[in-house]
Image (cartoon, rainbow, N blue to C red; front, side):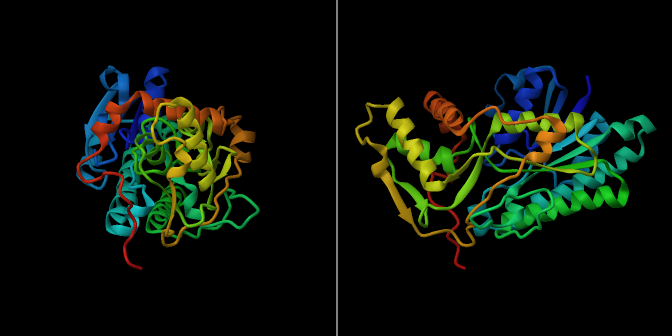
Length: 353
């Protein structure tokens, strides 16, 4: 069984990818995570104790540690999730986004370049570096159209700018050094095990507890929502059959206004918890001042991955959201364990402009 090096594998999307790989015996996984506030070993479930899973706590911006990982484990592929990912946090503290998302990606790419150079010809040909990115690098869409793999980059937030920089480094390492890199840009993910600073888990938990449901601006910002299990299935497909040097956009074909997402969550929580004293949860919605640089609309054209690799999302928004609400209702212990003393679902990203 081949070994793959997964960075950020204790985070939301990374842990889902690791759980899938271990459950389906897709690969032996060396899971590297710094274990910041958003990374938690609880998210790995049964994969954590599986003999096909090796966990290493390390920082991808530590070049010596990265070189050591390649030397010791000699992976056949890298799947790179590790990143600071919350837009509001990037507004309050952009420096860490530069360090992890740009410098950390550089160290991984450069270490991989030197490692691959020492492989036999067959190993060099088969090696893949899968860089997982976001649709936020493209900026904001108008009321029509979708992002394609050739859409120009126009990042609006420090987070998006840091991911754009990482994407450019990844592609440059393919073009300059021949490193077999593939880049994927995904739409907004949701599902179980997501840290509760993000929109959907924050609204689920606040609705359950009767806390205000803050909606930025007029609530009309549109996002394409992608169930995390579908995303990770797409990534495994890309790893197996994607072409080196290519970019694949991964979307859920599920555009929703933020306010409609919150109202749907309220409806699902009301249905599953009719005993809540503050029902209906919709009355908890509060419109608040918008975040700086808040992009109006994202939408992904996923035709390339559908046509070339035969991938399509298996979940629509109703089924995926229902499963997500059910999971948070059934796992309050996980929620309690992952929340540090420094985050209690307060609003972030209020730095002065």
